[in-house]
Image (cartoon, rainbow, N blue to C red; front, side, top):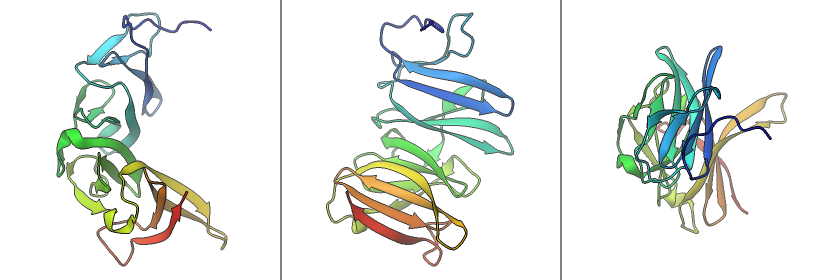
Length: 199
């Protein structure tokens, strides 16, 4: 292998993220409680932020009319989630759960979903937004084994009728998997459980 860049940290890099803004992209590394721009291997790594308690991050890119953004939540749920616009890294402004309890981030149907650590709840934004007021959806009443959310993701499957379905998937630490369909969890007539599995 060939070394790309030396961050100057003694700890290992535990998360590599890509900020993608049209034809431009940057490689972002989490190491030693800091976030670095490590895109250009010919110069020292550029520190974007420091003071984090964990280097394991859940992340996704999100685009609005205002620009391209990298969103990240610390998997330990002990640090404030952040947003990076290609130049500046700043704290996300989320109104709802305790901000340092957010442990995962994912996109589904134009909404950003955030997991609240140690619970069976996700919090989601309005369509087209990545921060601001959040609404809670509690999966607890559907999870007979308890536990907490281990992962959220999306799943695209063939619906058997010549098309595809875009589904929202929740997996718990007790092995339950819930599959939902619909654009808005606030509207019961369009948001519905498609399946519940124990794995």
